[in-house]
Image (cartoon, rainbow, N blue to C red; front, side, top):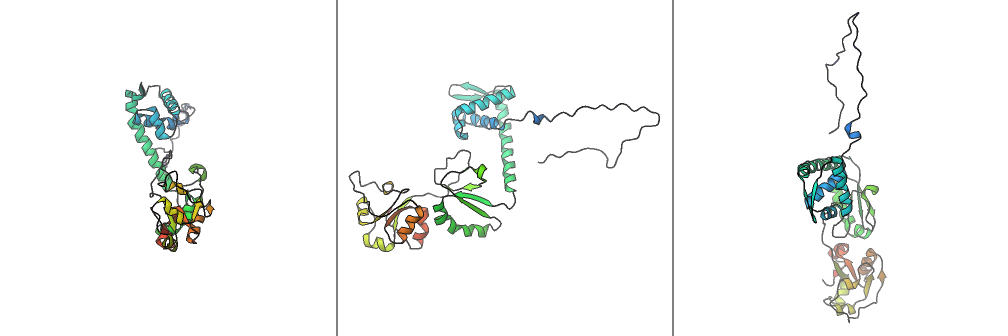
Length: 293
């Protein structure tokens, strides 16, 4: 809620004039005192650490939840205790428990932080018609996201989408990104991660190629094919049942681009190993077929 200056009094009223001959009492003037928050601001970082340590009853686990070191968490709590001039935790071996003062403080801090998060979310939601900035991988953008983007824009006509491609994790604050799509387990500190779908590797080729050479049910079946190799999805990552004595075919072209290997497979140059998200649409359209699971 915005803070507004207010003053009380009747509208249009003016102070009474002094009666003639009466001596006006001298007006006392004092220098305005600085607001308390100007020199004593609550240490928000320490408060967040305090709540995390209290929740996990451990400096180590609380620090892990925030993506910081245990020593950094300990220093933050120590700074908060010095600021409040009261002990907040009682150390008991590897575990910690709240002191009476800490137990009294915890629910109030949790409520205040929750209010702050809600206020931030409301402020972000009220940014107007600014674009939605998304970062993702170029191959995923070309093969999966772009074909589905028109459906999103038709449902959200008021949102302009700006897409940035990178294989690196980006700093959301420095780049101004609103969201990112990456492959992984979703364990990124201080970020909210939502699983979109499972991903797996599949061997694919043209339907005509598979009709000539058959499906791949074991490692030796790969000998019938001219394999297309990728530095990102090696064949050994998909099928290892052949054992250490298995001779892996090395014929065929090699690519360092995930989209290029899909295009080569569509052109009939051989059997490719690709992520399912990159070939789901070509398989659905009949340009490619899955050779095995």
